[in-house]
Every structure is written in C-alpha cells, then in structure tokens.
Image (cartoon, rainbow, N blue to C red):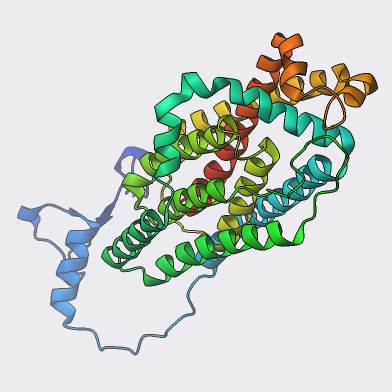
Length: 356
C-alpha cells in the first residue's frame, strides 16, 4: 500500500519556535499533554531527564576592541579641536599685538577706539564701576576657594589643580608680557607705556573659565553665561573708563583662552543645553562679523592726512572725534562687539570641550 505523504501544512515548521517529539524520545510529552512544546519547555524537560551536565572550564576570551576604538574615534577629533583652538588663541594674540603696537595705523585705530568708548562713560555709569571693583585679590581668593570646594565635592581634586593652574598661568603670562613688550613711539598717543594685555580682563576671564571647567554638568551652562556677561562688561568697562585700549582687552581674553584650552579636561559626558551653547556662539559670531566690517570701514576711512593731524603733534583724538561724531559711535561699537565676540568664542570652546 502506498505510504501517505504528509500535507505541507502538517510538516513541522522551522520558523516558529516549536519542536516535534516522537513517543520514544526521552522526555517526550504524553498524548494528553500534546505533541508539541516550545523550545524552552522542551529544553527544560530534557535537562531534567538527562541530569546535570558536567561543568567545563570557561575559556577567557579577549574583550572586544570595539569600545577602545570607539573611544579613540571620539577622543582624536576633540584633541585636534583643542589644539587648533589653542593655536588660534595664540595666533590671535600675536596678530592683534603686532598690529596695535608696531604699526602706525594700528596705534591710531586702537587709541581712537578707546577715546570713542570713553564717551559711553555716563550711560555705563555705576554698573561699569561695580563690575570692575569686584576684581581684587580677595575676590580671587574667594573664587579660588569655591573652585577647590566644588572639585572636592565632585571628588575631582585634579580638576581643581587644572583650573587654578590655568588662572595662575594666564595672569603670569599677562604680567610678564607687560614687562617684555615695549611700545614704540609713533607720536600717535601721549601715553607710550605698554598696557597690553589688560590685567583686569585677565583676572575676570580666567576666573570665569575656571568656574566653567569645574562646574558639574547641570550648572555648567549657567556658569558659562554668567562668565560671558561678566567678562564682557569688564572688558567694555576698562575701555570706557580709559584704563585700557581694545587690543589690551582682546589679547587678555585670548591668553586666558589659550591656557584654558590647554588645561581643560576632555570629559566624556553628555553635553548640557546644546541650543543654549549654540545661542552663545551665534551671538559671538554675529558680533565678530559686525566688528570686522566696522574695522574695515574705519581703516579705509582713516587717511594719511588724518594720521598726520592726530596724536601728540596735532589735534587730539577727542577733537578728531568731535568733528566726526558718527565715526566715534562706529569705533565704540566695533570695540564692544570685538570684546563680546572673542569672549563668547573662548568661553564656548572651553565649555564644549569640558563636556561633549
């Protein structure tokens, strides 16, 4: 008699997790229990019927190098960004110092910009005096203690060393540069003593960056914005009060940025408030573009005849600006925008590298 061929629908499927047992198979289910069981149930019955398996020594296989490769891929771009940003700060410092000190037109624009900013002394008033008076030795000591305490609470003592080392290195660099740089007398100003970089701005910027470096993730965004506003006000105030030229302020910020980018940790932790970080860099870039356009206009409008009339041998800068009041506002705006731009870009980079 011909053997009956099973219908395709009756054959055991290999796609779903079922297994067919014959009646003679060890651990096979009885007719009352059904002819099929899921694989986990079948495995459990087979293990029970066969007894415990002998234990075999486990072979320790080497860990997969994938995590190490992933960390390396994340670290290298950030290290390159750190080095590039620090080199950019050093280059910016050198270029600004050279143009503002060792060129005739640079000295003229630099001093004119400070004279123009001094016309904002009345509007800035007590606010400018307040933010500059905060900068003192007691304030530095207090913020230094805060840095140590926060690092201790976070159990990161090396972080305090990095932050305080950055503050010391930046302020030492500023004071040494003041002693080493000699300002040539091109008869563009009665004040021929070098004032670059600004000590007030260096203190403010370095302390702000120290707080950004040691702040925990939930507070780092607020610390960055507080430091940004404070350093911008300090930088503008020292120009408005006639203590420093714009180049002094910009070089001080770049010096602090160099040391902070060299010493800030490259931490592998989630970034806080990405839209907030982007807002800071957008504001800074917009101010940088406006300052660059205004500087180009001022350099083009300043003729050799103007240079011959200004300085210690001709009319004063105040008289020159009185004759061209619109140019005075342009120069004051350029100086302020440049300070806001450089300060924002430096703080943004340190903030970004401190937690990515």
